[in-house]
Length: 605
Image (tube, rainbow, N blue to C red):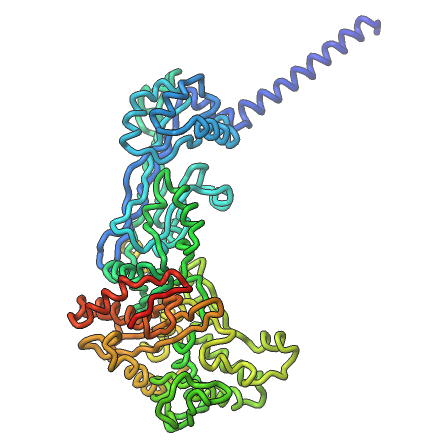
């Protein structure tokens, strides 16, 4: 073969290779590259996502709490954008040039061929101005959305809020695309899949100026959106509103439960915020303001704050002692008041004290002896303490009590293993951990857990999982909320404890509920960083409990100062639907008190 032929073959081979490379690239571009396919399709068609209206949320009596209003997003497909009047766009939408530049850069990073949100949550008023000029902005189109609206500016932590999806949200669920919204907290997050509905799509034919020329194939390939499901919550909005009024300018929490069902009637973390602040284009600014607030309004104290239960724990310790035979209803224990050892009493009272006296007077020596006898009943401290700790667990303390709340703090319940680690072995004794007898020490509970424990008292030994939703559309919620959790405490042991708690509620007008016999227990929670916190737990009525409630008021010094009056007012409002004339002054006192400064609280007289 001569040199000329060889060169011809080489040249032909080179062209063949180059041609093959171009063919592969073209195949890759036209067939495999979804972005290119998206762009090619967009030159003729525009697929517009149809976002469903989010499900509505009602209170237990059918009052609307959360609904929707229309808003618009301005979408951009970077590959289609041509030179446009930036100043005009900024003026139409009241945004800055920086907002536009950053939005376009973000859209390009996501995809040059797929639509992205440039400006979100445009009001109908601003959108009307934009729509008249939209034809001037090639590569831009609008997208209809819905935003949340609230009937009342309350229950922010329970209802939750909706925000834009993160990259992790998109990875976890292919349903979501950039710019979509998702429930970020509360009911909105827990019931996201029920509330969100199903997205639809409409296909339009467009011209070179990106103007719609008609519906593609007469709408044969359109898919309508399916609206989200409506939810009926367990909340009583009137009780929730009243709780938030009573807790103005205070820090703490309220949880009220219907004992027989576990349905949460009211749940408040204070200070709170208007849920409407986290809706619309100012959401980010408002969120940062709330996040940087030293009073921590975004922190959900009802689920996440962990307090020692203090004296509110004493009825449970006595029930454990009665069940274990460590004490009986005939037991009498001498109390020397402040001279008592190893745990002194806070005041002088009847002595020797029995079960009813101990509950009514919150007698520390009685509780210490009950705790010690329970543990020392067994051959070793470890065995006795394990039994005691398991009872505490059955009362719903030291572990999560609801599968509904993703951010519930499990609390703290010490175990044998814990104290073995702390004390380097098993030489520790009941005396070593005596503070547990009076609800202090290494015992931490949330307001939700304590309210649930009060429901256990009201039910004489059992509970159903606390929850905030009664129905999804017309279907009753099933599953974990129908499981009955037993404590193993005999019913007969509750009667003397109830009598002691009943006596706590009488003789003091600031906690007496007219016409209703009920059980309550105050608690003072030691606070090493300032003034002590106050707590109060109660259930009512005594004979047929309809409400179990726990109230924590931070920096209020005693449970009797604020927690007890607030709880009694909430009980009275829920059961009587009004406040008696002779108790209006306590209502006014609670509403006007300012306790947000932990170093200078205003104490009730």
